[in-house]
Length: 266
Image (cartoon, rainbow, N blue to C red; front, side, top):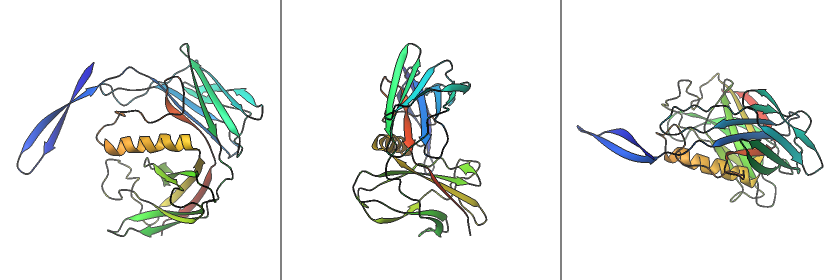
């Protein structure tokens, strides 16, 4: 089954309607699982995917059996706190420990493994700078990558308490064992986001969360970012990022470190 998407291309003095043929797909289970080393229990969100022909809404999946185990003998069944939202109680994130998340729903089983990286890389400094071109203010994160390749990082930026949806990723392919001062580059100017979260101005409260993630989680966000930047006009994902779940589900399970710094933008 295919759907047609009409795009209006505006040129100099002319307009043309281009029809693209897009393949629809059956709804799939979407799993978003997170366990950090911040002393909080695991949180898992279950929903069903949307298609091009539907609005960008995702129905929660209730009544699933969600279990979390680790390689130290720990085991727990997460409770459903609200429709589609499952929360743990006893297991916590520990550096170097491997965790397995198992979701059973609709007669199918989905399993993902994630290891919380060790050693945890400290978040040394958060600052801001003016962009090289224009007058955009950009966040700058500093940390020192430990020797030995394979370290991966995910940064989440908050402006006045609201999450910037931009995915900031870094690995140590070219920075192994070095001090890193990384600019979190955003568009900075006009945006379709009514909250303008890509733009920092003096007086803003800036928060950045640094996560050490394993290779499977890095690959999920790398491919997701690639899809979103390649298809900025599509509100629902036209292809699927590389998941660490077996069984055909979409999404990811991430056991990661979590370090946070906050500053006021000067």
